[in-house]
Image (cartoon, rainbow, N blue to C red; front, side, top):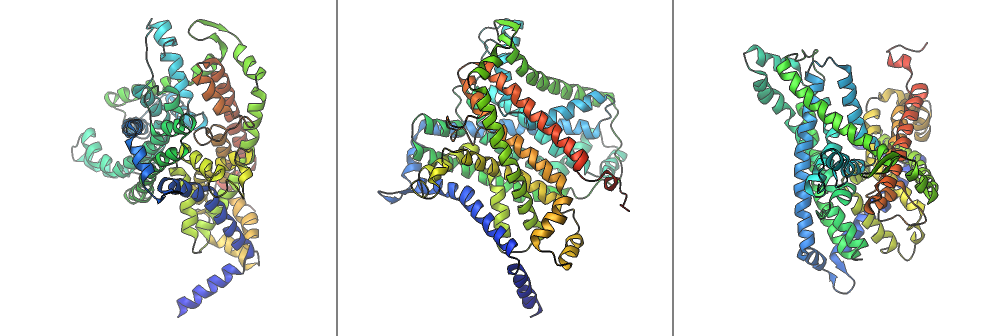
Length: 573
């Protein structure tokens, strides 16, 4: 009886706050319209025909295509290779960082730089570098080694590029997990006479297994969903993402592309659910809390030297590949004439470069505050409020993480150029800058929401309850109490969204029109035509824009972020 009265009071309190109710309704409409609806349209396209009603003919037709079956097998093979290689290299980096006594500060700085680079760079930079260094006109292959028939295209090329792109993600994930392993467990085994290898295989590895599985699946999903690298360096090695793109742009078969997209979505969605709701929970359950005391670092040179050298070589190789991009833009003709010239920069600015940068910058800039604010609102509702549709809002906002960019692109084409809104409401959305902004928001929402949820869980409920007791409504509490306390996460989400938006390609490649030209689509276009100098010029300026944005964020956090006095544990007078 008491529980029922309490529930009634909660409901009454909930519905007496019009701002809160309106926010939830608007959020549900946004998530339904721009995430669930495009995906539902793809599914309906695949199983329903105006002539025959419900049918599986599209799937039968798609499965009969030898090209699709090959692409599906290729995608799984590539995902397995990239997943294993990235997790292994990431584990080695994390182990060296957490367990080894590395005296050189330069090595530590090198690790930090390498872990940041893939986050702030366009997704196809390493593919461009691979072609410039090891292609038929490559600096290493042709100029230094005299090899004229080098072939970097295909499975090997994509696997190397994806591994170098994704292993830093595994490194950062596993580094945090290794730090949480209690050193006393490992030292007890050492005291009983076990070798370091025995301790690693019998104590460390079993504790780390759920985390390794989590890192593998995250990388596998990223590899399966990747469009830019297979498109640029894949050659004749088709993957599902590139096959879907070519089915739309080459075969003009949107219904067939929708069927393929549903297959790819089903694959990534299953992996995402396993990763998020099983492996993440297992990782947290296995590694809880912090280490009880400081770890005794391994100083044995027979262990530290080979591992440190290996990780340093990999780091230096990644840096070399990134450095080759600005040189690719400055050399007059790569592979033939290595004299320095501004000719490529002059060309891109002469033929529409200013419009490209303006469009990319403005659209990304508009998407950033919208995403940051939406992320914080969703996080606030999920962590601080109780209502029936809370779990739905959290799941749908995270769902975009599991949806490959090309699948979302096809969904938007089918949903807003045809479908329910193709001839009526929202018809004017397709082909505009607004739809690109919406895609940017949807793609970045999961990252911002995760960050916001983590930040909000650290805030004591009593702080907000005091404001409610003084008569403040939900809107007032959120803007005057909660948001100031999580402004670090807000600023971080702001810049992360800008970076992800301005470097995005897979989701927008099918939605870009001549009215709005984006940097990433231009890089892809020039690279496909073999104009690597122009592609590198665009990529160089893009990297500079991204680094400038991150520097600005650090400056904002320094002066407007959490008080340094509070960080130091002191109270304000």
